Length: 264
Image (cartoon, rainbow, N blue to C red; front, side):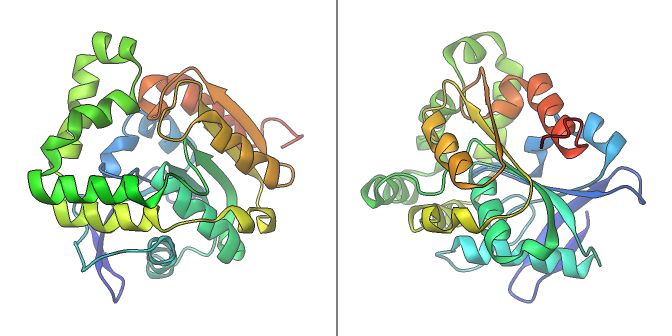
């Protein structure tokens, strides 16, 4: 299990795919870990050197003292790229991972080649919602919110007909540190990157979910409108679109990253 010491924490990461291929960084959502990208890994690792990592406070990465900020999470990515001697990379993040991606697109443009921002937002919810969730998790544990989270992350049809896949996601949530989850909730709560979106110059794909209650389609559309030349694609899914419609998600992402459409 490889780790990298950033100087402010320890990040767990995994590398897959050909060593000489372009690097693609994948960034997980709040409450998951690098395993959330398993549906995409077989195909992505045919084309790219895939760098998955557990966001600070998640999975095998350490839980440093919170609260965290999106700038801190973005800085972790830069530290990891530096440590692995990677000058530039594609970046794909979903939900909180996409928020990290926005920060990287704004503040580290020289490090980012193509940018995929999936089921994400530049500003999400009012502080009271996040403070209520933080209090709930501190008092009653992660398990107290899991079923409500899964109901937002997946459509009723997927919950009913893909129990094995839903259970794998449930397990990731259950294994998330309470302190790590709370510290990352604060990062999402305190973020507002809307005014910075227009400064992103990387070729950008924005993926939304038609049934996404956490980051509704209009959040993705706002991001796409603000980033010049970006492309918006809406998938028939809720929040974790890379699980619910894995094949469509992967195909959309691969075509964008390989620049199959010259207009992107």
